[in-house]
Amino acid sequence: MQDAILAMLAKEPSHGYDLGLRLRRALGPLGGSMNAGQVYVTLARLEKAGLVVHERSEESPARPDRKVYALTEAGHERVTAWLGEVNRPKPDLVEFHLKLAAASASRLADPVELVDTQRRELLRRLAEAQRAVLAEPEGSTGGLLLEGIALRLQADLRWLEACERVWSRAGQESGDA
Amino acid sequence: MNVLQVRDLVKRHGRKESLVRAVDGVDLDVPAGQMLAVMGPSGCGKSTLLHLMGGLERPTGGQVWLAGERIDTVGERALARLRRRSVGFVFQSFHLVEELTAAENVELPVLLAGGSPRAARRRAQYLLDQVGLDHRARHLPWKLSGGERQRVAVARALANEPLVVLADEPTGNLDTAATNEVLRLFAELRAMGQTLVLVTHDGRVAATADRLISMRDGAFVEDTWLAGHTGHTGRFDGLFAMGD
Image (cartoon, rainbow over all chains, first blue to last red; front, side, top):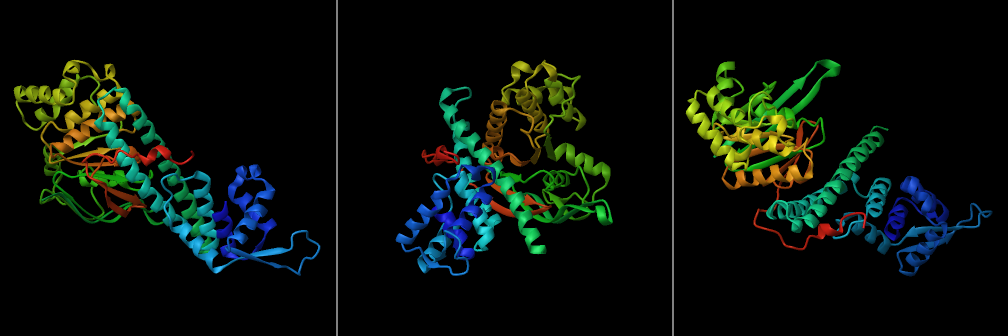
């Protein structure tokens, strides 16, 4: 959540309210489960950590939330690091999804390249797991857990295929426009 | 030595607006003993590439060399002979002759290549034993499980000691257990030094290869070496995969 908000601010300074909207949009149907207050709590934490600063906006005095948040130098560095790191050893589906959305919006990284990097990492792990499966005698219970690991990694890889398909199309469309 | 060499290979289907570049300028060297997987989404051209390398289709442009012999320009009869003797094919849907027993299916390529019935019988016996199906030799294909049928198909592919085995989605019709049966068999072949090229969209199949090429829109986008078959680290960070 913290990283995703930082990455959204990398595109342009925003109100907390707008950030919430953009997060919900990026999450799609899952966005409904997001607590509206979460964004403000996260922003306060980020500010304390020196990653964002706020200014009072004068253009819309009627709005309850007039703070416009922007990235600091340190915040910018953290976004770049986050986009570049491979998710391991415990990649999170939602986090990775938001990373792709943020990379695309901020244009700080190419989502398709992030997918490629992640795929290489998953394939490496899958190779390890699948070879261990094959090293177990056929029909033994010992290999079952390994097989479960291999099948889950396989499912992750299939999801990455879908990510690649959709984000490369999105990239082409925005490139044409 | 390279068993297979491909240079600037192109295969187009259709014309003008409906032109499809199934294979779009591919270069590839497959050294003897290598197990290579070509991976990509359906429609990326990987099956066409396999067909071109095995002489099942003719390229629009470029060259295919099999053990130092150029095969894209030879005549039909010479090509058919090359296919029979030097290439073993394994297909997703097995392609066994349903009227013949497992053993007879394996004997067939030996007979077609001019081997004696006796030599064919011996070879089939040996190969079915190798793939762990000697007890199924007299069964017709429909009596075999999917994994067993594909193992018979692998035995058949090996009948004439081919220079290379080309497998097109060999586990595409198999469940998890049968997939493992076939992958075990490939691992054994690889250990014996058999050159293998398989195209697949299944990450588990691709992950057992020495080398993995990713293909998109008729071209290679990545060529990676997977870790050697020397065992694993035992950590399995995959245990904590996405979604935990």
